[in-house]
Length: 76
Image 1 (cartoon, rainbow, N blue to C red):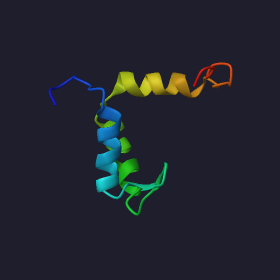
Image 2: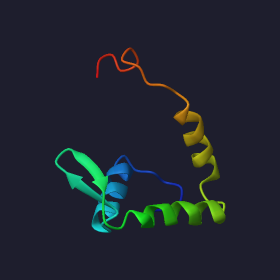
Image 3: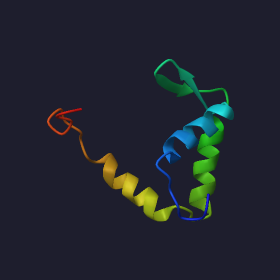
Image 4: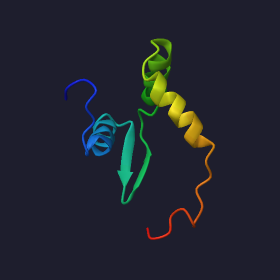
């Protein structure tokens, strides 16, 4: 994947990668912590330390403050 390009399948590809690495496991329609879940925290800590994905991490912090309501999901 070229730098800066996010495909329509990026989320699925990342989940598949984490699943293959035993960081997350699929249980039916759910994703649960796997035996290597600590590696996810290490990846996050490394990204913060190296100042990677600053814009994305800031956006996620803003999104954490938004409460999703049933009205917002109308039609889903």
